[in-house]
Image (cartoon, rainbow over all chains, first blue to last red; front, top):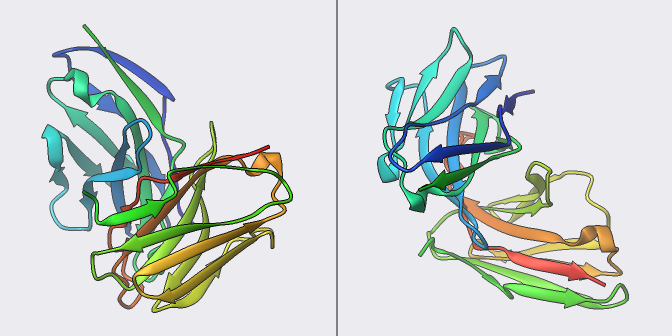
Length: 114
Length: 115
């Protein structure tokens, strides 16, 4: 079975600073990895996905993530935080043949301060 | 606009009531999902429908009863719920083909409060 661990349930950054949200995965077969964002009172929106092509994946709103097999990581980054980035971020993992089952992490709440 | 709509957005019900949550997807997908999101807990997958057949039921209590009349609509029928069932219920849809993990698209959710 696959799983993801998100280190840090709360992350706070200053506006304009680097955003780094951590995700480590566990999977016995090559994983497919996703980052979703959830704004208050809304559903989850896909930010980006890794599906075994390029290891550096670019997503919406200036976010990107790098798949590092040696570190079993898929950390989410953004060079410069904006106030509108304040939200909860979820990492998720799936595998080929897994029937579209996504396993989610517990989420990281990002706070952006002036 | 995510292409997945859910109604109602908010629902308050007593433990003896019967109510239904509705989800509709306008994306031409063939798989639909119900998730439960509770505070401080990971998203819990409840049910999966693929090509209108239920393919997953994650040990969900029988007081939750899903229905998928066609590939665009998904319902969650609720009866004799407990206060701990209060949560945000999210619907999602995706393509499904030979078990490959296509991304899921989520609706805005129904905030359910059981009194």
